[in-house]
Amino acid sequence: MPMNLVHRKLCSSQYWARAVEKHGMPWALDGVPLGAHVLEIGPGFGATTRVLRKRVARLTAVEVDEASTEQLRAEFGDTVRVLHGDGADLPLPDNEFDSVVCFTMLHHVPSPALQDRLFAEAQRVLRPGGVFAGSDSRTSFLFRQLHRGDTMVMVEPGGLPDRLLSAGFEGVSVLAKPGAFRFSARKPDSTL
Image (tube, rainbow, N blue to C red; front, side, top):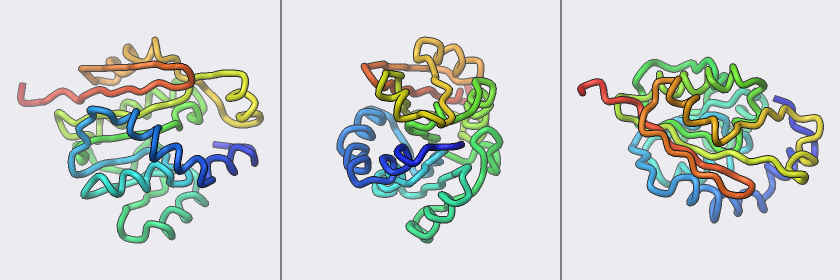
């Protein structure tokens, strides 16, 4: 998923890491029960992974960009299992995770069909009753300028509930604010 140089510098900066830790993650995960075993799809430069690693017992991250995967492995060593793979075709077994999360990356998935496949894959790898949660950006003039030459396929918050329901989730919640939205949904408990 191509990212221009300015965008890459911002997302790998200490400024971005502080903003993620102090504002982005607390808002995106407010009230979300992560459980012990978490999968993060699309960690990019690892700002969100650094925060998650402190909050959960076991963390797996799947990153599509091979160079980023290697950088994450070098940084996190054996404290985070980092896999090279595609969120729309996860190299993981069914029902493995208590929660699946993704932050500010859905707009880098190159088509709505692949975004929907990512949602279905998140549902597949969750244990029954597990939670899929995260956040993404909403478009603005500045956001569009930052993404010049990037893959940018925006997710419309108003249409997300139906897409998550179609992927097999229930209890879908989407909250939008200027510049961002957060979501959570639950895999049905198979014992009911």
